[in-house]
View 1 (tube, one colour):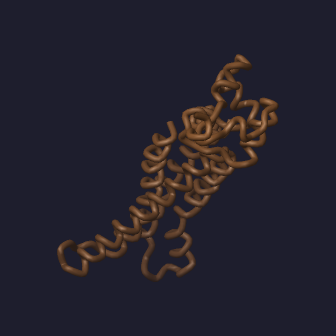
View 2: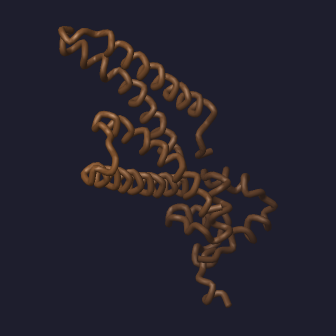
View 3: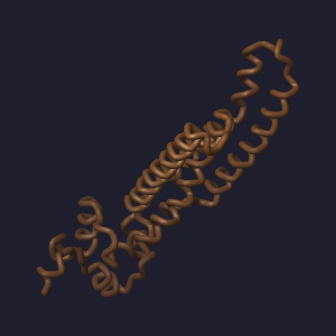
Length: 67
Length: 133
C-alpha cells in the first residue's frame, strides 16, 4: 500500500516525530507507514485522515490506482 | 512515546539482576538444606527465582501494552519466532537424546527453556524490527 503521508506531513512542515506525537504513535511507526512497510489499522488511518482533513482513500491507495 | 522508558528499562535490569541473585541464593540454599528439611521450606527455596521472573514478565507486559500498534505487531511476531525456534530446538535436542547422540539431564534442559525463550524473543525482536525500518 502506498500513501501520501510524507507529502501531507511535509506540507504541514512537520517532522516525523511531530506527526508521531499528534497521532500518539512512535516515530518508527510513522516512518514505516511513509515507506510503505506497514499498513496502519483502520483507527490509525482515520486519525490520519482527520488530522490532515482528507478522506482516508485519498491518503492511502494501491500503486496502480494512483498511476 | 511507545518505547520503553528509562524507568521501565531500569525495572527490567533490576528484574534480571534480582533473578541472577535469587537463582544463586536458591541453588546455594538448596545445597545447604538437609533432606530432612520440611517440604515447604524446600519448595520456597527452590521457587525463589520465580519472584523476580514474575516481576520481569510484568514489566515486559507493561512495556508491550504501552507500545503502539506497530510495536505490538513486532512483539507478537518476535514471540512467535522465539516460540517456534525454542520449540524446534527442544524437539531436536530430545530427538538427539532419544538417539543417544547427546547426553543431558532433564533438570538442566528444563532450566534453560524459559531463559532460551526470553533470549530468543529479544533477538527475534531486533530481527523483526529491522523489517519495518
